[in-house]
Length: 304
Image (cartoon, rainbow, N blue to C red; front, side, top):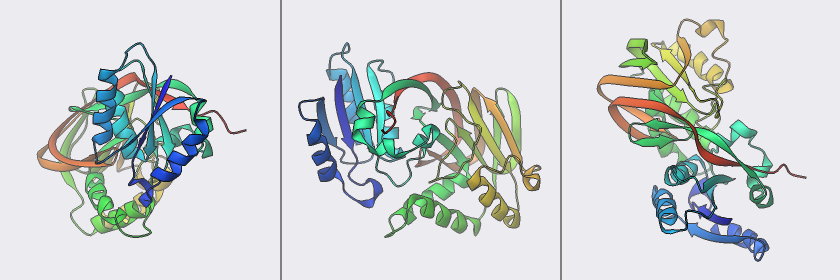
């Protein structure tokens, strides 16, 4: 098996290229590996796609996303559709929320554990013409993610802190959006709402557990929809949403809708902010579907 390390030098605010390169030297002669340092957002996707197109399809390749959830998003988008590709995460980003579906422990920062790990099939989500690894969200959350990218550029601001700052800032402006959400032919909402999150994994935004019951290998998406809500009540929502307690709180039972589905359609009268694995866009229509067992994801060997 060939091991290819795709390093995002901007992940986690510290350029760790030299450090990780030195760590890999310990494996010289033990594994066949290459290192590629990305130059921009989306570069990892293009590199992985081109690499697989140009190399032997009968050979196994394991691509390590060295960075955060954005790096994983790029690598998975490049590897998707290639049965001879596996994807691993060497966690060095500010968020790394997807690995929390597997415990998210220290083994995701240990090269030996990752190299000796075994791959398991996990689901992905198709969002229009894009592939989502973890969570896509529409409405207030999209606006928050736009703001989060701004705050993450501030010194000493972590992924979770950036999300918190962006959420508070967004509360000062228009919160609700007019949209229609249909899940497996059932209309969940047709009117004003705060947000809708369609989840493969359970956590995003640097630690917010929006879909606490989600599993990455069950062949369905978990949809958490928040209806129109007052600013006063939104404060309580954010606190419970962060801990994954919003589904069971009696305070929020009249504003939270939760459902599992294989196909979701969202439409709005004008373009609305949405995010896919932390990347932000605007659109007036989303067609979303689960792709079961779509990619091989490496589960690290437990640390001794």
